[in-house]
Length: 111
Image 1: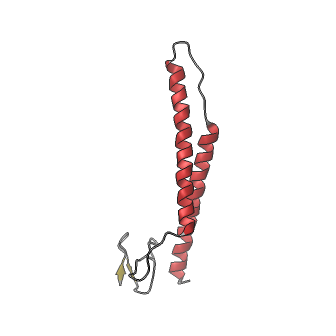
Image 2: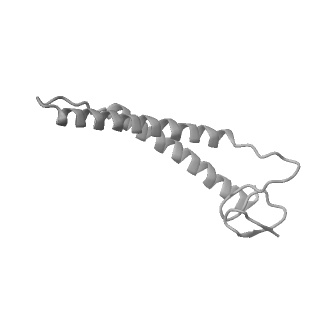
Image 3: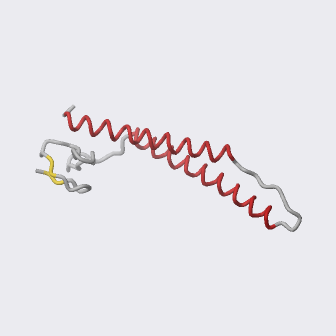
């Protein structure tokens, strides 16, 4: 029996992924590689987070500048960057979640 290093569940020797959390077991002959689907999803999540945070930063910075201005001022709400970034982040998260769910199901069914 193999114990998962992530969740601690006991698994059969023949499985390549933990049946509980789908964490891959590392073997000596195979070098672990990140699946292209997961890598793409994580890249999309990072990109989305940067867009969203950048949009929030510009919005907050211009608002604080307008409030602190002695004559008043105008501030910019960067809805496009915020919404685009949030959408990209959650699209990447969803793709990664679906990949892990499919991977868990294939491990559980042995396919």
